[in-house]
Length: 532
Image (cartoon, rainbow, N blue to C red; front, side, top):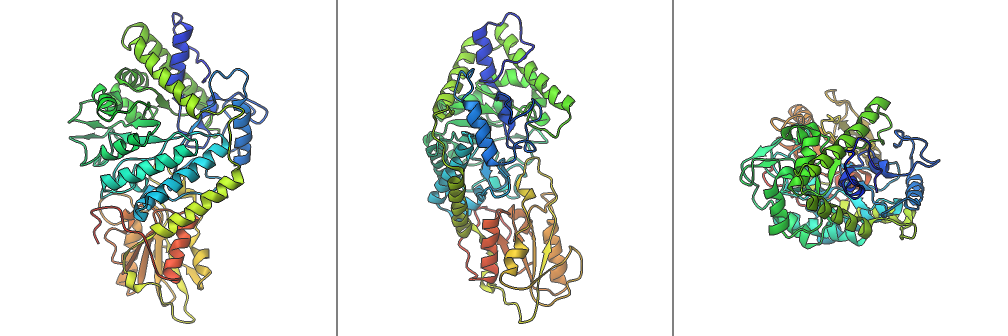
């Protein structure tokens, strides 16, 4: 159970205090360790405010700390820590040598429920091995064209029925491994044209079939659902997470009886439309949300002490506001009890005790790597020019590579720090030369232009497509490879276009095999509207 926050109303009784503590969670472990605000500080974790990846530097150390935390004598509930480990672009466990699964769009390209379920199992076993048993995944939003920056490769694709099948399979796999799954972002971000991390989205109506993936995840017994911050005017004129109508849709029409979690209220674009952080928390709980999610209080060790202290005060302010709202009748006491009861069930079902079984980390990580290799082999897609593969490089010629740098526009994206694997993997087949963007290419033969996230706007060409255009106009035979969102390929004149959906080694190895090995790809682009 989280520690009791200071600043609470003096009239609050201990039962209410304990219930509200359960409802206010430092949530997403975007640096891998956000919920360590809940842990007792041991010798392995020297002081509050310094728990980060600079302190916990390996899965083995994380496993040791969570094992100690689950044994805490004062713990009233089994230890339950949340994390964002989606595969693809968003992975909190991103230390070197941790196997990373391709993201949802790769699973959509593979068109295989078995692969989606095996991805869930693999991620679940990795997480449980280190003591993390609540995953804020999978994304159930449908993909749009052009892609929403906040979704992109995190979606399984454009077809709601296919997204539902894959989401349900992922949920089954993750929860079979003993990790709670979370379907997000209800009632669906498909069709939203702005990034909800920066702007409060308002749309007239839900996208076609937007609820189908959530219904499928609920039918698969998903433990949690994250409710988004976007407003759907056909449902209500309030953000979804503060709308009794939207929560009623989730509970009454879709039959969800698990834990409803808010989008991260610490994001300004999320709380501002509701009047601020504390007002948003009160509105969300009153509407039917069971847990309000905030940024971490203590784990961002690189932040100044004053900033970390301010985060602790903000959480205390949320707890205080919820307590006062109950005392003044704004939130019904029964509503708080109902929410706390659901959270307690989640703790007991998925939380860790000292005797809880945990997979062996090396074995779990090896299994995840094998799953990643299988999914990558099934998913990498040649969107154009399959008949031109494998590439023919004349004897004695050098294969030129042009890497276009990541533009780094996304708020949360661990994959952009992935090493550049392509040159070494291609060099295993042929001699390569790396050429800077915009420079002359001094060798004959094909030129491979590639990048992870090179699009700056939804209009116009990506930076990688512009480089492909420049080289094509110079008469070069160009292959463009998108290691992230397939939007990077839009409008490119390159005769060969390849979508990898992930910059991690298994997917890049599949690209290298297709380009210079057997030339065969097995994926099918899972996004409608692509201009080729």
